[in-house]
Length: 127
Image (cartoon, rainbow, N blue to C red):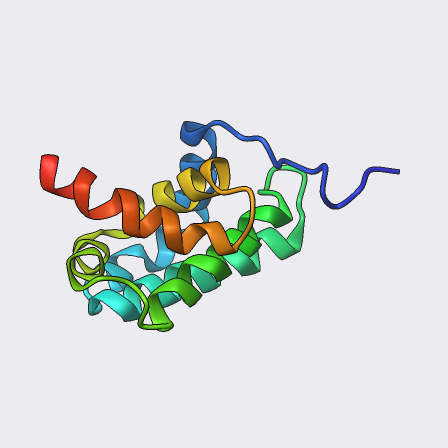
């Protein structure tokens, strides 16, 4: 019997983005029109919901935990203002890619906050 933790936990960034964006397609335009935190909240909640379904062609449950950690980091008011502004400027696809990147780079949920503080504003500024 396959463990829930083994199902689709190591997807490539392209495959993860493709699966989640397909899942979010009916609502992505609506989400892109929302304010920054509302967009982040809705995208991460939908990623959590999609991960919990644990379908064969879905995404693994660790992505749900990463989505929660990303939303918590933003709502905890511990991020610098420039990092919050960079997150607010991200569209749905960028947020989905960020969830995958955080899942790959952060061994624990607590590391997501540190990762965001150290990397997000710097990478957004260089674009």
